[in-house]
Length: 91
Image (cartoon, rainbow, N blue to C red; front, side):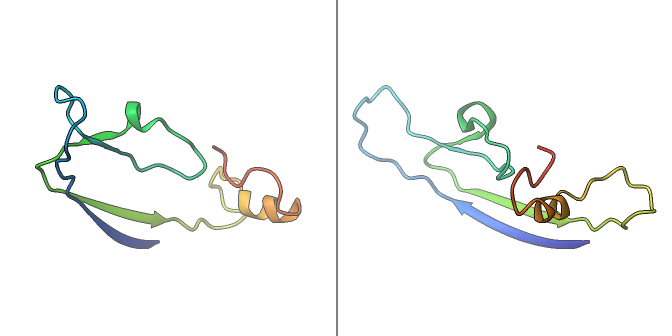
């Protein structure tokens, strides 16, 4: 299993507001590149005046090929077999 740690530091700043009754904020979300999301609904609001440290650990799992049971489909091999067309993941 391969692991990598990524650290993101965000520090939104105050800007001159066109509408003084609104607060500036940034919506932040981490997701699969194959599954689009709505960051306003599924993300986290980052507000000015705070420091946000976000730690991301990416894991890659390598399963044994057939005849071992893993209930997995090798979408990468299927994609290459189909001339690099079609889905590259189940999602």
